[in-house]
Length: 130
Image (cartoon, rainbow, N blue to C red):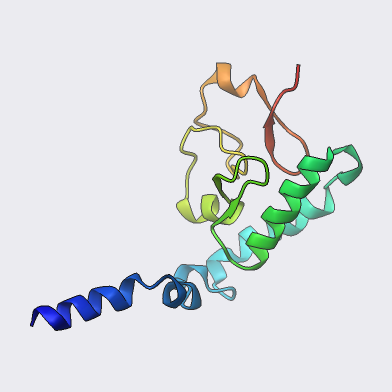
């Protein structure tokens, strides 16, 4: 009995198996995601790459690639840390108040003093450079 339990647990924890089976709410044809994809197209149409730094363009490229692959996170090119995509924030359903880089809720729960130090650069939220 323990052996079958271990086999089941091990099969479930396989990262390659998890990546091949996206969660039902993340299926590309899910009607609930239609609003997200519309907003993504609008954001891409308003993107001003010529006003972004080289590192900002790389962040945008990695984020766009992750969203296109339906990934919920990507690795930050400068720090190597995991960053949540706009898709993850949309699926989450509300602003967490952490001033996330790709927040789709306009930082509505972020403290005003923190919000004052952030700006949207046409691709994502960033700290205001001084």
